[in-house]
Image 1 (tube, helix red, strand yellow):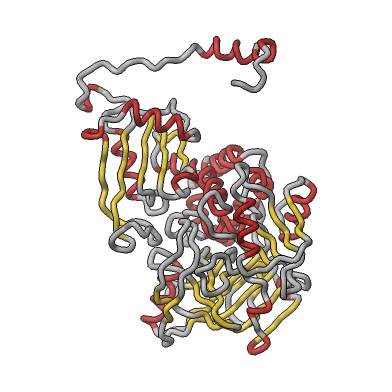
Image 2: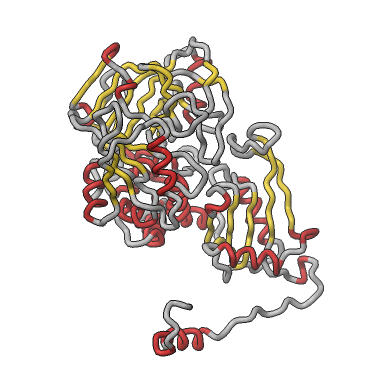
Length: 488
């Protein structure tokens, strides 16, 4: 069963011992963030935290909701993330010849009748309380200010819905939303974001841009909004695929957008095409650094609706590991089958926490031709959704990319820098402060595969040291008999 409401998932976490309730008073300004950041340093991600008593607000806050492998599995209703990957693989090999990729296309005529397609209902719990116009006061929400150099509190766990002014195609995005006034919000998006492009089109066409920001509901909506989907794919339908059930929507109270019916809080508004963008102050980034001030539009909030007793979810931006990095890990497992369809020789991939869950990518391949690693590198660099890492290491299929030590051993063993280091100029992530020009940089690839003579390696390649599978299995079976405990 899909989780229709956040409260359903919180009850599941409570029963599983994955939720810690904090009854002591906590200040949303800095203190809450400091507590969460300390908890998320744990190797397993630490528990989810339910702050019952946030100072100056009757609304509780939940943090680190998906910040562990186990809670991600609970949200996805699987026993392991590899099981979720296998389920996605089965969807790719569905009964129809086109599979779910074609079903997700916004132009697909059958998508409206798809059993996972969103459906609009007339009434919803997210509108049990409705505040319009001057009755709206965002300061009533316990929005955290997470780090000392942030000037304003920031909504960090919202899914933001916009509609393209010309095509009417809708897009769900995941952007930090800086609260700068009782009815003013700044979306921290940039030119690589679809919402930013919707805004730029609205300015050119001199049209208002309606915006809806959803908080809470099924926790998988966060994965839906941040998934690296290829252009032209329907995120609402993808959300239904993730949930195993269609997403219920309801028409907003002040904007003509359909919002998640099971959300805790909905914030509605619009961007005035004629308004001058404001210089937005710095906010915390998942890069582990502050963003730089930049000119961004202001969303004029026209309505806030919510459940009778809402809970505010937050995601604390910090240096990984954090909740966002765990979510990235889950998305990597979910999208591995798609990558394998695009690049068939790929066996596995992994973006380690040590690389910020973004800057470093490990890829293992089945190598059967010279320079195959270079072809894989170029394919990844050419795919915007998957090729934004600054350092990509390609290894052979027998290297476990989930173990960093194994990858770096292959790098040390198999690379000749003058031959195996490949540079690629192009775009980079907009929050990569090391790039001299924002969004423009270099990627580097390391071919750490065993080399063929056709690749200019004239010497024989040595065999690795390894026992037979039969002997390894026998030793494993005798381990308890040998009295060596957990040393294996």
